[in-house]
Length: 351
Image 1 (cartoon, rainbow, N blue to C red):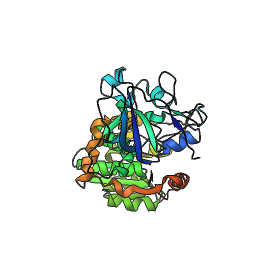
Image 2 (cartoon, rainbow, N blue to C red):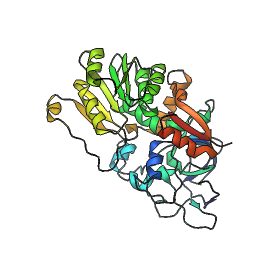
Image 3 (cartoon, rainbow, N blue to C red):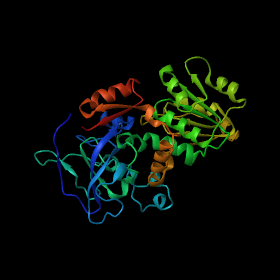
Image 4 (tube, one colour):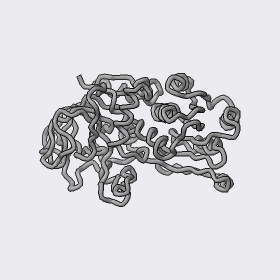
């Protein structure tokens, strides 16, 4: 539902951003459907890009006129944040899913001045303006098309960061991405950028496998056509060194593990519904296959997002091939197309 809302007073540590475009992520739909509980009614949106319009008195990181990408909000003071892992912030839920400022107030109100939940990932960017914290804005170069950059904030940051930071995919190595939506394909691009020489995309939709070859995959596998592990071993000999699951589906995660070679390393980044269980064969642990869950690519957004922008501008990270633009008034259609697999990465633009 689209309606006019009111902005409350900007705090000294906050930034007012005029949104140019916001991409839609699976997490928005999960919160919309309350599979992941956040208070409703709420303004969602967490992949915004725009121009700084105003800053609070204590904000030094950006100034009005700067082009920025909005990222997640962490506390900056817990053990994980201090050690350089803000995506694992011990207060992540309070900062990103409480739907209010830490003190309990809101940045937005309805037309009658009533409570309107916001602060989704510290931004709530499904609107012409967003109020963020000075900490979760990332300044980007102005010679890049700003409307493209929102997807770098979450899904693409998560998978690229996982490939680069967590798995540390290396030159000449082998890599498999399970799930060839926008997230999995961004992992394919990141692996290609590192110099991996065998890059396999796995999905049930042939329509997703074709673009995988266009953005860096050397092989694709339709997982409905035979045993995936056997096909991967036929390609690699003994399995892949690195793999990533972007589906969150337990059976697919087990297949990913089966495809790892001895001491191979896999990462789980796909969202599962609360209560989903993963059953492992303990012999896999004896075989020293290493696996981990990764949040937000374990990234430092102020480093990774500008790096991805530079790679894109150098022609080495063609994430724009995943994007389809919609007018903001078409946001429901954009979400539906994404859920049906018709659009890899929908981005809603403000005119």
